[in-house]
Image (tube, rainbow, N blue to C red; front, side, top):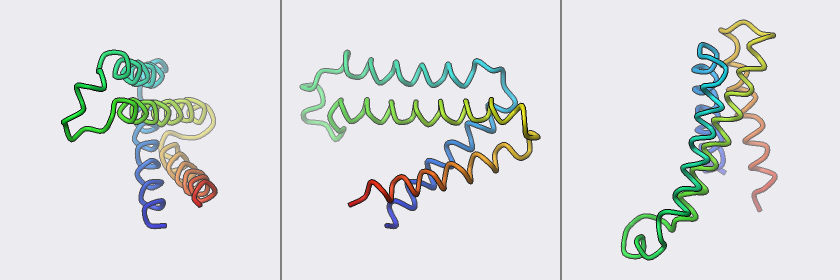
Length: 115
């Protein structure tokens, strides 16, 4: 339970940070960072062979690419939510709304997925 709480808190912090950065930046910077992280995940699978990671402390390449794709999703959701909220809410409240909503949704989603 504590792990789910901490994991959802960290994910909400990432969402809030991306929303803060996107609220002041051009519209294309957040989605392009998300696309770059997704491409990094694809590059990890294509370029790093499994044999190169066999005797290292790194997890297999599929887990590294899954982590990059998860981060790409977080960055994308944070950027898109900041872009949408930028039209309706003052810039000072965007981060609070994204953090609160992201933490609540992430924690409830993880609780429903947990056995």
